[in-house]
Length: 130
Image (cartoon, rainbow, N blue to C red):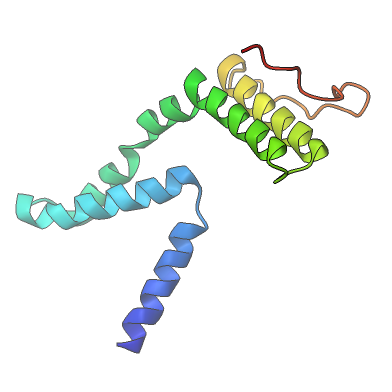
């Protein structure tokens, strides 16, 4: 029993340390592998296809305008609640906008945008028009 608990702890540690894509992929891969026996299919093949299934929808969800707006609003709420300082708010906002810009306007061949230097960084995020 202790061996099973140790194995589960290690497995949960692996899932917890992965990205959102990896964690969801492991979950859907595991589910498809579980159902593979009842369908008479190879569990390894089912795991592979199940692992790859959520990547497209997740990418569309994470890069949507609505998700970006929600993330920026969340940062503003954290700042107003005193959970993060203005400097952290500015840094996280710049990183979030750079991430969004890279995914929306850059090609894979050109690579990610370079990090701005101190001279090019804005002092703070522009106010939101509501």
